[in-house]
Amino acid sequence: MEPQKRNPQLEPLALTEPLTDANTKEALKTLIVQRFTRWLDDVLAEEKPLEGLAAELLAELQAEKASDTVETSEDPYDLHSTWSAMTALTQEIKLQSRKFKQLSEKMASFTGLDESIKNLLATHREALSDARRIAEDGRADRTRREAEIRLAQRNRVRRELVGVIIDIREGLVIGLRSATESQRKLKEYPNRIWLKKFFSDKSADQNHQLEIVKSLKKGYRMGLDRIDEALQQLGVNEIVCEGQVFDARLMHAVDIEETEEVSDGTVLEVYRTGYMIDTDVLQPAQVKVARAAERTTMS
Image (cartoon, rainbow, N blue to C red; front, side):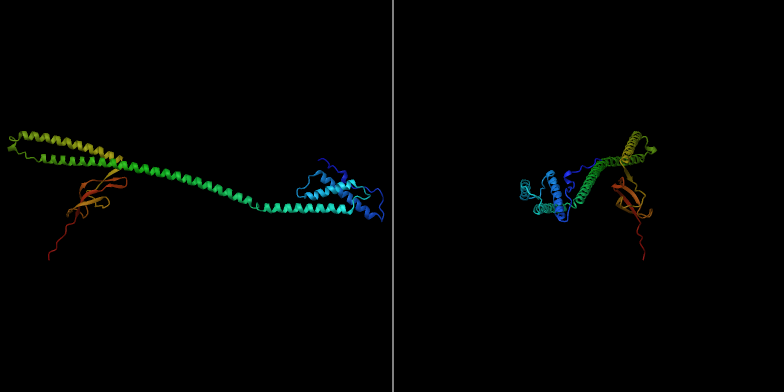
């Protein structure tokens, strides 16, 4: 670290004459004034004038300095000059203090600025987080609604397709029942021995009709088996009713028969088959239900 250079103007002035009791006070005053004046001149020469210094006061100081350099006197550093310099310095200090106070008052409003900025940043981050969360919730809700719409459309199309298939199945069931009934009637056709010679052609025709009916029944059964397989693939199952206890959730009672052969509430016959799709009732079954016969008491 380089040693600090010393200003020769600020060095103490050596006394050329020994101090006596008479001139001690005056010599000390002169020495102090010389040192302070030289120090003040050196400071003012190296630095720019302070902004708070009034222009009139500065001009007055400069004029006094110029007049002091022109005038020659045995003692140029009198008490008046010293007092003027001290007054100027005091005024400057007051001006600078006033400026600093005003600046401090203006800066006081920024005291909580850091905390306010932190709060604003935290609020901004929270708002961004809320916005992202709302956007994600919106996307999730939109995805869920789109999935629900697709599922509803798929279920609607499936129900429509199942309805068509069930109608076809009902037609096949009716056809199978008719063929079975026709086969039964053909088998009961009278075939007595004494009439064989009169109805020999009729007997051959009867056998042919039985073969036709048998083929029809086989075709109906094959069609029903294929349709039942397709319905199972679509999640549709037949409601088993006959011989079961009546269930109002799955069945509609369209007929009632009094009987003692079965317990009360037993399904005797199915008029129309019911179907379940997944866990929902697609079509309730129409059935005939048994009811216990009323007993009459003799008086």
